[in-house]
Length: 286
Image 1 (cartoon, rainbow, N blue to C red):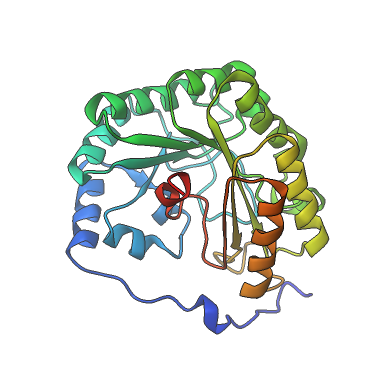
Image 2: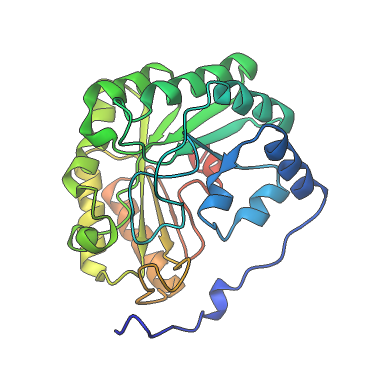
């Protein structure tokens, strides 16, 4: 398919407009504490729904990423200086929003010796001190395969460590040129080697992969004992990003979920609008 070909969005991808007081309140809190969310930075299609239900996925370590994945709308370039007050600000926002389940993710910071692992740990600890009942899920980068960096995050005590493989290995050169499929799988394997925490991963479809390639990647995830899985439709943020090759039908998402559950995943969220942190609290509570 030519990169100039633009597919028409099917009816199952039409979003209902969300608004209201909670939406405004979440935006006010994020602004007050000068926080980034992946909801806004990555143009998540569910951000209005989540904000309206007083949910947000906090994005730490700045707003600029040191990698340039072709699917992602997060700005790449020279990274920001670390904000030493960010852990405190995230914790204050969690408390102000009354969150019982918190998802924390980040840009990739290959410029930092530990990839930002210590900063992740500080954010987790600050949330737990301020809101002891809150559960924290982290969606982390690969830390360039640094085992000690992963251990630092584990020791801070999140309930789930999520790391997305994003796509099938054949497409990595096009979609994730600075990432390594095997390295991502090894990170997920190490979560179980180093801890008793849950592990989670996600994959996008519609980038040009085949059904069989997705199934093989799901088998790869189960081989490293991945517990939770998300599968969602890739939506190109702009014409400059990797093109949408296919809008996958909901029936196919249902088939992926059926096959994944047979493989032994604890819970699977699979659908056109599913994202890695969408309704994450519902997944862990079954």
